Length: 334
Image (cartoon, rainbow, N blue to C red; front, top):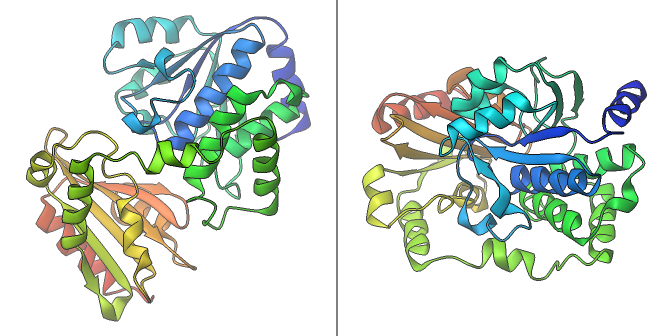
């Protein structure tokens, strides 16, 4: 981050401010960990801070400290809009374009507040006054740790803030398996553990707390998996009917896409999830090696993300979406 931007932000934060912190729609562990970690830091420094999420976050993140304070825009639109309009500073974390906030997009575009972006995705929009954007980082939480350090406030990172940051690094790094994980990532993790983070308990809360119906849903997704052997690709589908039959709740499909890459010789995988309320097929892409799923999602499925992890959407039927995907894959050189 530019030294002049850091100095300007230090000056901004030198006196108490009304601040809003926003994650992307469908917030994951990194989005919630980074926003709540920054929230606790700002509260500690006497700011009036509020986290406003575009929509609900998964139940498996509800244990995060401060999660009970998070306001949900789609449930409390009027009060959230008022808080946004009164904000002096707005932090946008783990996304870099307003459209990633869904229904909040038009409200954000009208605001006069100072925007500060902290994000690790590609091709950021230019709405922010101050931008900390770096695609080499495996998580926004690691960048929040750096951001606090840049402000010469590292001593403010306590167990609560460390727990939020640890959670986002753990989830977005695929438990430290993804390419963005560096030696410095592990050095930060070591410092967080030294601050008291319960590193043996957090993975249990995140990954080993499934309902029976969620495991059944996982079983159905694995049954639905298809392999395109000649193209080193796998994919699976879940229809709205299947989601409903296994009592789907938000977060139940988290991580299912990764199973497709566990198959020998597979380098590209996807999951297609029907959402009849929104009239879309939600898509997650994963790859390993040099195949860029971010570009693939941008080019063909109105999405984007990282080189090895991206998302997209389709507004045609499940079968039409899958047919399009197969046709595209057959033209790739994987």
